[in-house]
Image 1 (cartoon, helix red, strand yellow):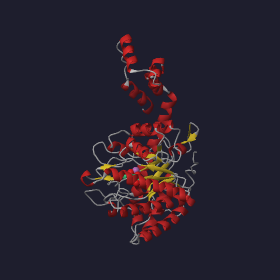
Image 2: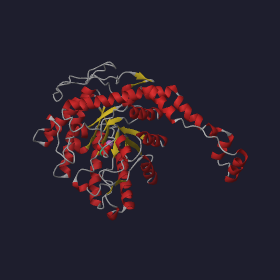
Image 3: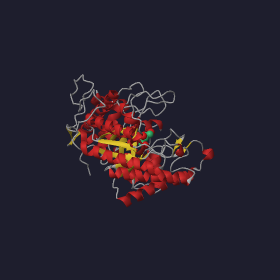
Image 4: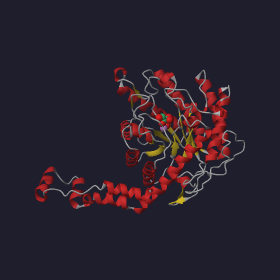
Length: 452
Ligand code: XUL
Ligand code: CO
């Protein structure tokens, strides 16, 4: 079922102070516009194939990078100017941050957001107090959602930052560590439900190992599956109907992460009978780290019916780590949107900008430039993808390339009506197969025909 998004404009813009450069909402001005605070391609109401751009793209802003990211890197301190992160009291800071978040999202004109439990509410001296903080911030967020019409795409628990998870969360060698993770998942899931969240993500940042010398890999994978099952059971108990996702990533911070790529996730989900309960939330920079293109990951997931949602970002060609940059390549966004269109569009999922501005882009207004660029790149990618699919030559080429498999001989092989003896007989009668060009360059030109 397609979930009707709220109108992208008309949000309540009263009381907004953190982004004075933008009186909002960001307007659509079209291709010729030279205004850096306007969309050139993203026209929320433009209809493509019976759905508006807003309905196709389902943009979400991520809370962690956008409002909590400091610009800290392994070599230097935070750089970001963030007026909402100044109050001495952590709960006041949390409320200020949420004010800034909803001001930003309203002005940008997105319909969805995503968060980790401790993005929105500070961890405190005890689990009970941390839970109170979370509940209080969920109430605050609930009001903001009602005021603006912005919906929660998904929630999650941060099971990787605190030192207690240094040896893993679900995959901790100590069941006490596992219990802490489970308790956190329970509360994060309940928070997600209370906010009407459409999904819940598991990203196994510490669910892997640094060295096999100290690791019982078999047991850890079983533990990971156990926690997922416990979450599914709890969802049933509390009536949470949202979609669960697992987000593949091969490494960083661990040397090896168990949910390393789409195919490894599929194997894991099948092995532990979880395939009916979780879909994949795919992220471009994670695909890159796994040595795959995002297109590969998307295609694998789509064919297995587990393509759920996308963390929209990109890596850097020269830096080997997860730089989480905003996506600007039209090739990338076109490829992603081809897969989304081919699966019939998002249902519970969307495009979540799990991306951060560069350390030198430290002013709040840079957050607007970053998201506007990403949204425009995806809007144009959607148009190009739609045009390529409508044109049909790309699909036709692939169909023709495999056409012989529809012949009687090809069909019989696949229907198990042929043996190796029959194949030898075929070769003896027909000799060498004819070689046909794969036409890669011609097809690359065809894609360019639509992008340029
Ligand atoms: C980390 C990452 C996470 C998940 C949510 O690489 O992508 O932010 O998306 O935990
Ligand atoms: Co992510």
